[in-house]
Amino acid sequence: MGRKATIEESELMTRLSRVFRDVGYEGATLTSLSAETGLKKASLYHRFPGGKEQMAREVLEDAASWLEENLLSPLRGDGKPEARIRAMTRKLDEFYSGGKQACLLNMLTSARIQEGPFVKPIKDLFDSLIRTLANLLCEHGLEQDEARQRAERAVMLLHGSLVLSRGTGSTQPFKRFLKTLPEELIG
Image (cartoon, rainbow, N blue to C red; front, side, top):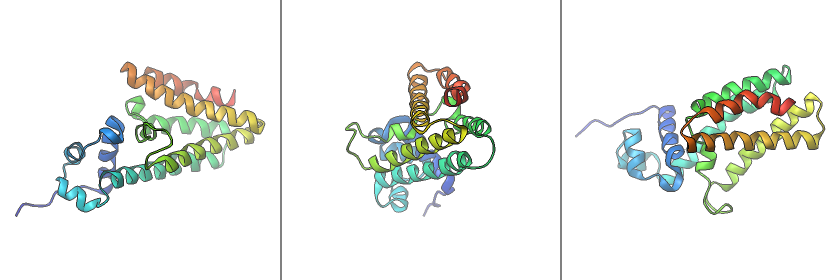
């Protein structure tokens, strides 16, 4: 009897995330998930009895935890708004591997925008990010409507820069976005 392959939980989530970021939910196969993790299909089913949907859901939950800990909580924290936004840009750079990684939220979104198993958690993540940024901008002195518009624009530019980086095969759009993000938000 062969030895069971083992992998640390955080590494497992990283590897599964890589597959979903690269090919999306529909494109991810059990074969590709197995190859990336180094686990046999039976081991994946043992760990994730809900199959691919459970894997994607747990990857999404893991990403949400990372975003809460590394972006949202610090944005709600103490210090000057400008400093918190600059810290956010560094964390975004880390999360998206300098623009080399696609957005997990985008890649898990169904082609039919109002359908799919992840509609609500993805919407909740976007809403939380926009609301947190808008609140920070209000703290900086902007009116609520202006703050909300700037927060939405920043989130659109973030994801647009990731799509453009992926489409052009260059991380430059993402890097330019990060460089201009504090000015975009604070003005």
